[in-house]
Image 1 (cartoon, rainbow, N blue to C red):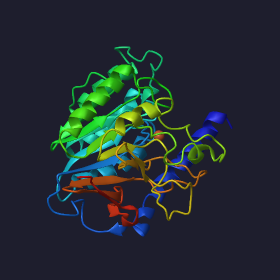
Image 2 (cartoon, protein in one colour; image 1 turned 60 degrees about the vertical axis):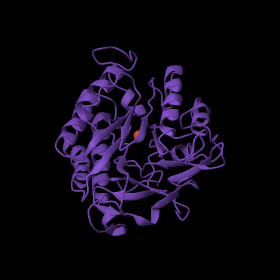
Image 3 (cartoon, protein in one colour; image 1 turned 90 degrees about the horizontal axis):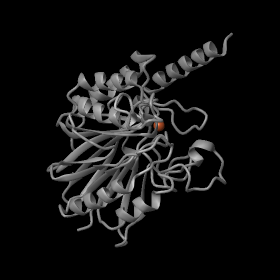
Image 4 (tube, rainbow, N blue to C red; image 1 turned 60 degrees about the horizontal axis):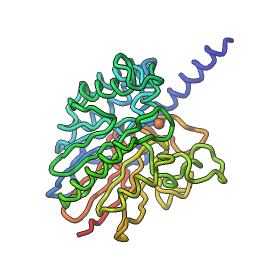
Length: 346
Ligand SMILES: [Fe+2]
């Protein structure tokens, strides 16, 4: 048998398993009402998913699986203020893969605001060597699909949005590596945006596909080599530069994907010691909350870290606290044992 045929059969098998394991969420989740704020007087609420790795082939499986989640968002009892897609939306940044995403999102009224954040896989498009090529370069493609999907006019791989007075800052790599590359221009812009965001007195949400180095269990989660240096597998060389900016402010939430993990907390028996929600200290001795997203759609049996697809977080901001709520969007269930309440610094 030709190798290609063999690979195709194995891929199909894995995707079928991936699809079939998702309803497991029904067994371990808590079925209840549609998405709605847990409490009254919610200032802003958003859903976040990442790592869908959409592909043009096997479209019914990939698009169907995504649409299960989009339908759940559309059916929210109270409309979400935003939905963030935090990178690795496509498996290889090809037009047909972006089209699957655009087609799926266009069918549902999920939220007024959509945030499309670039992941490393999204930078691996057909013209990854010519990042700025106006025809099919990574940057023009990202800009074009941001307009198509989110109706957002952007000029760079990064941008910000103000939603219900809260700042949502989307960072993005400007090169096609597994780790991130943030130009000096992006870092300066980021620092200035954080200053403006802090002036609101509201929590600040920062999105970057790659987690901060040494958090959430990379590279162990990928390679299973316990002696791997902990500074590999996240943002990369510029991790400290990003952290230096984050550390200057209170009530910062940093949302990443990339790891392809499921939900984890201190009670988790499988995988690494790091949880999906971690903290690091800022310059005032207060916590910066690091929220890592489980991959929405990626089958990874070998590492044992991710069996249930269709998951992500719902985040709700209130006066004095932020709720971080685990949900399986594909099955419409809350996974409350992973929920976190973050008390805001006054
Ligand atoms: Fe990914």
